[in-house]
Length: 148
Image (tube, rainbow, N blue to C red; front, side, top):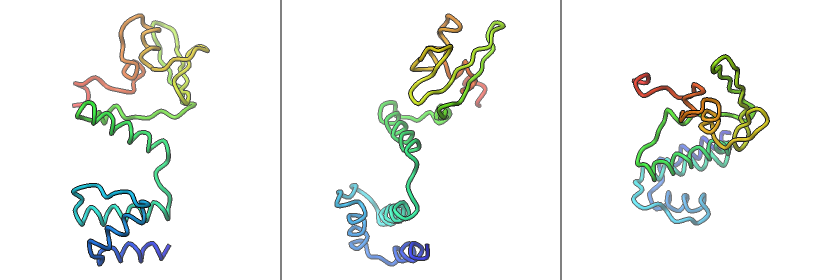
């Protein structure tokens, strides 16, 4: 562990050319992103050193970041409130017109009464017969005026 601390401390004294060389070494020759400042380059090298030594983000978190990047690219904004992730095995329970509905979160989709669905919205429509937001129906997302 002491070695990583020494490496990180040494980054501040590195000249930009040495930081660029270190970045290329750590990223196996990938080209440097354009417009990176010296400070950003130093932080990027520090992150990569720590990632290699201590481990990176879990795959689920990486998928979530990829999803957010795609959402930003397509919509120009990120819905932070809607980023809650549900782990497989989680059970969502909703009382609707005197009946209890239990939904199980799967690796890819959801299950209600032995049938698989790709989204909570499909399940909410199945239960209510109306166009509901699935996350809102199951209490995972508030109405816009409730969050402000």
